[in-house]
Image 1 (tube, rainbow, N blue to C red):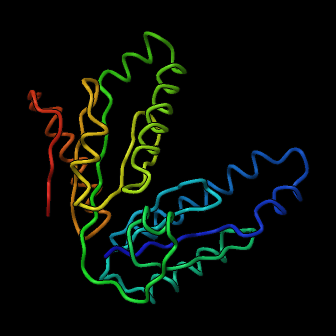
Image 2: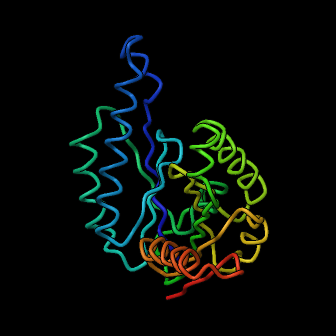
Length: 223
């Protein structure tokens, strides 16, 4: 099973209000810096960080990660870059399980994570023809609909541009594909016990779909 680590900025409201009114640029640069550091650290352990709400960020690590070493380095990152109080909890389970239920476990065993990477056809050309805002709003609408439909089975995360990823368990991959599929979408799916690898395989599957231009709309690559 994947380790899921919740990073929580615990005195977030008090911190933001202490900055005065000219604060949003400070908040955004600080959150982005923390996300950068967490993502950089995660990839060294074959993990991946989801930004979520930014005041709560989610790290996924494989079950064979050296947890003690990761936590030690995580504490260093937090001490170096976060100007506010940060708490973190380590769970055993996939993000949707933890974020919905919050159960905790001391030890994980090997289990795969599934990442579905959605690619919206002609997103770039639509942006130039219709302006950048409308396609962006359409992406947000799609994310909202998918997140509500898959609430108990997956976490839907926006990663910029037309990049939507859905993190789930392999047993839910058919449900994810069914809910996501339409004529304007290709879906690359990666499955691995290593979260970073699952994202890599999902991107590779999308690339195959783009190059081969076959009639099929999704491809699954499994370790």
